[in-house]
Image (cartoon, rainbow, N blue to C red):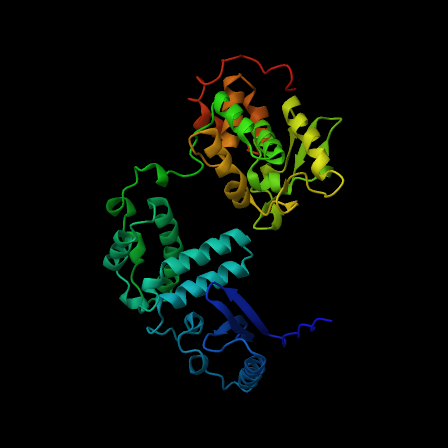
Length: 389
């Protein structure tokens, strides 16, 4: 029998991060819930017991009104709350504090993971005192990241900006230095690799056929065909269950998404919707039945693992990239299957209010804004084809 995992003492948690694990202690001081990392302690049974004793010591002093926060945590961002903020706080202190706040707010696993990558990308600034951070330092960091696209650079600096806003609130900085730096001034933004994956760049009918014909696996083909025919996001396709399909009513209910192996709600309230299924979408489902209908609640599986797809990134890396290479089709992000669905129906004169409801938009405004110019690849029919009802 395997060894039973010991339960942590109350108020003691272990935080997983890119560098390993950190013991955290949690307590309440002056009505504020505080969580502090014991960064220099390896996660061992002995140190966990030490952390529990330290927490008890702190709670005892709080009860006797003798606790001084700065004596125990001299660099903690929490000091600002109690009127004793220290100028010795580093950039890393504020980055970690903001990441903790995001975790407490319950942001999605993919967002937290992305923020963790941003924190790592800013490693050259970690040891800087917060009062030493200047626009010049940020500019030099931008110019030194030669392999990072402008879009990624902006995302990283957005994380930094939000973290440093707290230093402004604390009175340690007069203004946020990140706000004074323009990425476009120091990094080329016109290259194709820096274009957002969701910029509208749909596939033509010829490209769609080539992609489906070149899918290296029947289940890949079923997935791609269903994506083109429904406009569903990859994360929604990963979470689609057989109970969501109404074969009699020829529709699919969309109510959740799979992100890094975790089921979550749709991106927006309007994203919870019922999609009408074309004959080609129903055909893909009929073919997929033989693979998953009797074996899983989920419609689409990774054929190699015979498990539901963990998320959009898994589909892109394992199935989408090799298929487009084999088809000889110019690479675009899988999200373009959604844009292809939209532009096809726009070009066929479909009612835009209906289309907005199918795609999970509140109204047709986004369709007018993004898809009006994508008409020429299709035959310009003024009504839908007979098999889509």
